[in-house]
Image (cartoon, rainbow over all chains, first blue to last red; front, side, top):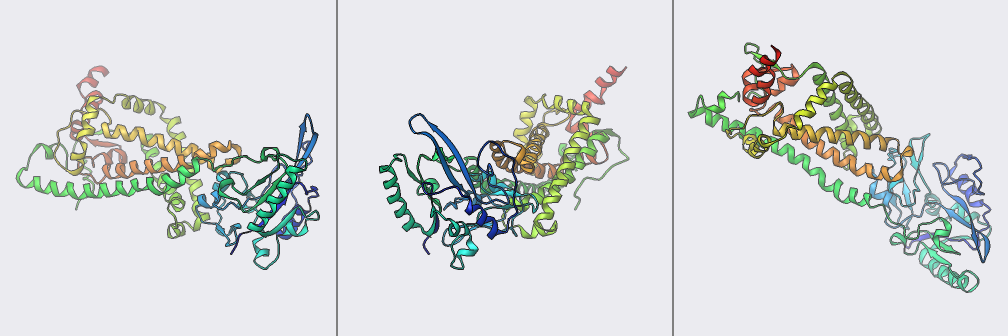
Length: 272
Length: 229
């Protein structure tokens, strides 16, 4: 099955936050109130009960004046997700069409995924002692529906469909934007981290949208997962095997010496 | 087959570890092993049967944290009630020298049971000095990285990421040492008497003279008596 994904077009988004409401509605998530922090964003970051947010980024340019960048921020459903690599309970899985989903029944709330994720997306939900994040509405998609956010978007800034088709569409759109007042317009999610199952049309460079230009999995994570976890632990059975060998050989050798060397230095020295 | 040498009350004995050291040692034995087995549940992939012993992954996590808190408290207990003991211990470790190197070099033969003549040792022999340096260091790393992983939101994210591999590496080296230490301190025929040193507090005088000649001489020998007089 081909990859199915959301294409988000920041040039069309009006930041109405309809997607946030639809997400809360479908996933039955309670409201999370955060105090005003001098920014139009309702939340600084996603949280255990808020899978998607609209970020408002104000940018002052000496030529263009003030520009407002909107970004729908949520799980990027990486093709090779770090959360899935580190999860000790294999709670994460990829659907055949590319969504990274999380099984709360397996989750033990260790939060390894939160800190392995280059975007810090999986969030701890304290009331359940579990992690929660965007599912790309895998439950809806499996029934032939589109994700709640994409369905509700009134500005057509969100579109759900086949990733290859949406990518072609995004490339056309970026060409258009570059020729029409957005020379730095770009696609995000095509190549980042080996490909993300979320596509973004940005009107400016990713850093202007609070996104890392070259996201990478923190290097401690592959060191931990590829070296420490699979290999280092073998030292423990080695120690046990060594002790077992010594247990046998000491007793064999003790019997041997006891035979012809009744009162040797070895025995006198307190060796039983 | 005899596993641990017999406890001989009829022979003269000398004190090796005081009560505080022994309580700390065995407190750490219990809490470390509890932490180890509840922790292996996550380290070894698919250890469902191991988790089941502790009432599932949730239960294992809870026991891991409770045991970890007690493990920390035993460290505090040792520091509060026998700080001088820790200082003396560290001082002995700092005496690591030629005799200790010779001991460690010859030790593989002794380990397998060949008769070896060892140079005189201080309170802790070369191998014990190594264990005394590695294991507490690893346990301190485990404690620090453990609390960081327990409360990640109050620490910088970079530190939390370092804590994960640190906890695993420290666990492996601590467990490696604990395996060897557990065996050498009990079932190994040569050093088995030291089990009673940690269990009852005393060891046979002749064993102490043979295995820790320098320590015996300084603590119970003529030299010590002269100093007291």
